[in-house]
Picture (tube, helix red, strand yellow):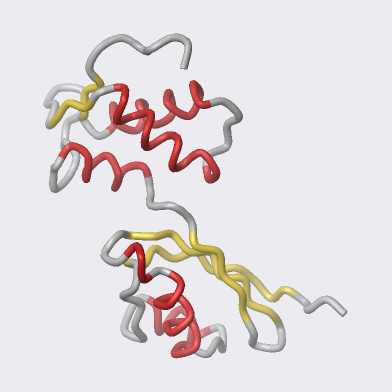
Length: 147
């Protein structure tokens, strides 16, 4: 018989670094979820992505059990890593902080494709480029046709 879903929790945790301190502990504790069990499972599943910020969606059930899905790192964080910046621009329309190429945009789009709400690589690349633009990162060149 299927368990009754009590709710969902969305968090962003560094891979391999979940611990019971805030923000993870208080959020899970308030829902009655075993904090240490989540931390052990999450850290075991994300050892290969240590240090990267990973979104996680936790589904918790009425019997206090849980499941979770680890997603790919957010596009904004991947863009900052590619451009070697600490943060985006405070005024993205006036002050540009970095430049990236369409090949770099394509690699991010291919990695993130499963989590984006689009069907083609072209549309995924346009979404990534839009995020870059809103962060003050310029994409060099014209959009490549025929991918």
